[in-house]
Every structure is written in structure tokens, then in C-alpha cells.
Amino acid sequence: MSSRITTISLAASSTTSSIQQKQDKTTSSSFWNARQDCWRPLIEDVVKISFGMPAKKKRTGSRGIPHRLNEDERRSFDQARRKGFLEVAGSAWRKERSDAPLLNTYRSLSDARGKPMIVLHKLSPSSSGEHVDRLVVDLSPLRLPDEFEKVEMELKERILLEFNVESTTNTAAEEEEDTKTTILEIDGNDDESEEDDGYETRPIYQLSAYEVSWEVSRSVGKAAGKYLASLFETVEEKATKTKKPKGVKPGKGRRHGGYGIG
Image 1: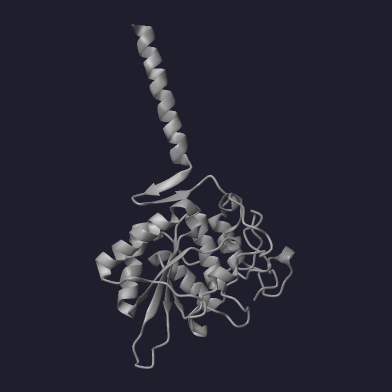
Image 2: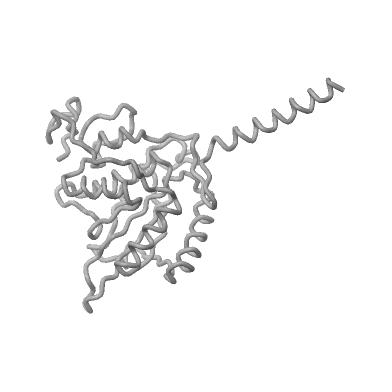
């Protein structure tokens, strides 16, 4: 009798262990999951490259993808960590860098945390004087492409129910210059085909964004951003203001933490 009980206990323990191993590969929360058995940057490294310092983990940044933030972008970045979503003017495009370092850095942070990237693009008023902003959720940091469509449908239903706003789809040809985002323009080498395991091994700036977007008023956009931040648990309550490390100056070589990015 004792032997039989022992055998059953061992079988139950083995089953529990198997289930636990499967759970360890993803982070689950209601309707969405985030893959864990894959390459991700460290949060501290994301902060380092935002100052132009070298990261400990290779491939966290790239010389071809600007991540270094200026003073205004730093303020928005720190605020986004506390609020759970990023607010930017237009596309956050910075002429000097011919890119959007703030979006690049916040996307890397989202990837490091295994959370979707939530961004409210504050657009210029229309000819009628009405503010119509764009709220965007990028699901690629979850690194589970097979589940993107399911999460997208759930998001659309929830936002429609909560705010009575339907999702919009814009092609590149339909977008105006000042409303374009640069997320899809940082995919890395175009001549390198994306393998099935790309989401397992490649840094986020080499992966295409998977965006769900809504055209919203300013007030609805902020309310929906707060709602999504709660939904995806992106608020960092203990996040403090990032401080500039000593001795880091723009234009320095990579060895000195400058990356030549100002």
C-alpha cells in the first residue's frame, strides 16, 4: 500500500513539474502571454544605451538605431515608466537623428519587461481645429506571433466596450508625413529573411512591429492609455528619474559610451 501511494505521489509530482516548466516559458495575465525563453535585453542596459553608454548584454543596441535621448525625451521616457504608456508629439521624429530615438528606447524597455508598447501620438489639430490623436499598442514585445491576432481581437472588443471607439487601420500611403511612426522602419537588415525563431533570438529592433491603433480625442486617448496600462500591467510605481552617469558626453567613441549619438 505504501509503495502504491509513493508511485502515485511521484507521478503527480512529475506532472506538476511538467506543467511548471511550460508556465515558466511564458508570463500569463488574463488574455495575453509573454514569452520568456527568448532573447531579451536587460532593463538596466536599456537605460544605459539611452545615455549613450555601452550595454553589458550584446545586441541590446545598434549603431544604426539611435537610442540616446535628449533632455525632453528623457522627461517623457521617465514619465511613461510611471504612467504605463508613452505620450509623444506627432511621430516623435527627431530631425537630427533621422529617426525616433524615444520610440526605439521605449520599445526596447517594453521588450525587456515583456510588455506591449503603448503610445499616444498627439497629433496636430485638423483644419476644423479638432484634435484627433492616435493611440497605438505594439504587441511585438510579447514575442508570441501566433497569439497576436487573438490579443488584437480582444483589445478591439475591450476598447469598443469601454470607450465606444473602433480600431482603425492605416496604410503607409494614407498616412500624412507628420503622423507616421518609425517603428516599422527599424527592422534591421531587410535582406535577411526572418526565420521562424526570429522572435526567440533576435533583438526587438530587428523585428517588425505588430500594431493595433485607434483614432481618439485627447481626453479619450489618455483615459484609454491608462486603461491599457492597467490591463497590461505596464505601470512602474517604483520607477525613479533616470540620472545621467558621470563622464558621458555626446560624440565620444563607443568605448567611452558615446556611440557617436547626440
